[in-house]
Length: 77
Image 1 (spheres, rainbow, N blue to C red):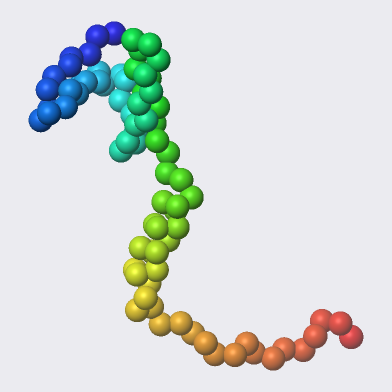
Image 2 (image 1 turned 120 degrees about the horizontal axis):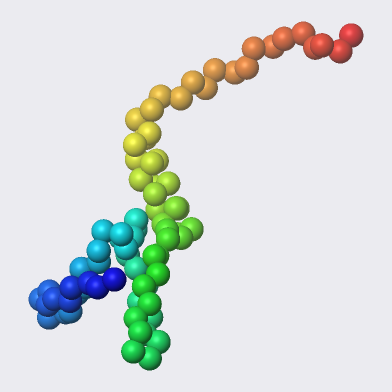
């Protein structure tokens, strides 16, 4: 399968065919002789913690119910 190479600013870019698209925002590039190997970069644990921080901001105004639990009779008699 062929792909087009073009200049993007001071860099060279490759336009991947639709069948070769990655479902990620970044790829890792490795050079092996004359071959370039592209691997998808998956989110890591640090990214997950960062996302959790953003989630916290979404719920910061959420009112929490801090009423004590209701006392009930024990099932053991």
